[in-house]
Image (cartoon, rainbow over all chains, first blue to last red; front, side):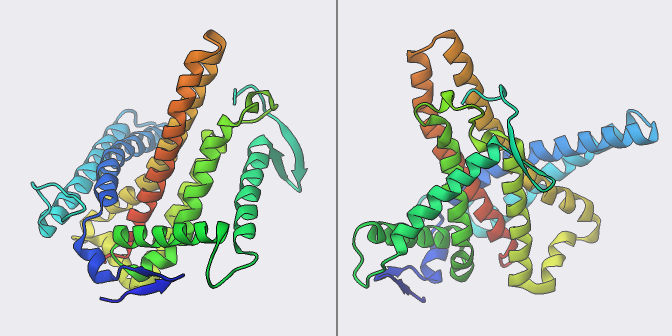
Length: 98
Length: 227
């Protein structure tokens, strides 16, 4: 573990940091997933509507865009669950004491 | 504070119109710059006063981002940017709470304008990719075709959702809060707006923290082991 001294204080090294699951990481995961899914669906629908307007294909590209957005949201959730299960975080919560 | 009532363009810098939002941003930047100047103008080995307070804050932020981002060198590299985000957004959110702000023509918190929040989100977006390339080189491109090349469109769309969600979350929260306070001021002039303003102190801090933490987590993801 490498410690760094700045202004007389000792900063924790990488080894120490990796052992702790920071509360902010859990918070960002929670906020991120919800808004990523919503934003993906919104972008899909808006992009589809714009393309429908350009190519006069209403409503097919809007539907495809919506499905595309839903798929992206599901993939984002899957990736997050995959990462959590790899790190053994699933099902036991995370605290600063981890 | 009562926004949407003015569309004040004060002057032009070449082709760029300078309006009340930009002037407020300049004032906030000046405040942050002045505090930083006074904290660092006469640095001592054994710090006292403002220098001492700033060193404590800097050490705390380095420690915080090191724990959040896993890699110490990445955290140290990006902590100044992220801390600046936090301070700028916090002061922007709070600028609507300055006593008498409602009487200043054209005054409104910059973060209640989506142009400002989108600019901040785009800085995060480009910072994430700069961090990804600087940490992993060209291997960083590999995460766009992970787990297989068929996922490229979904991965690209996911990348675009990050700045959009950052933009809309910050803008929506601050805009909504300002709207509610403005309408309450017209309807019930004293006690209820005061309570809402108290709540907006908490909301302003939470939104600044959320934006900063999400930016840090995006950078951490781009520089992580998987890329």
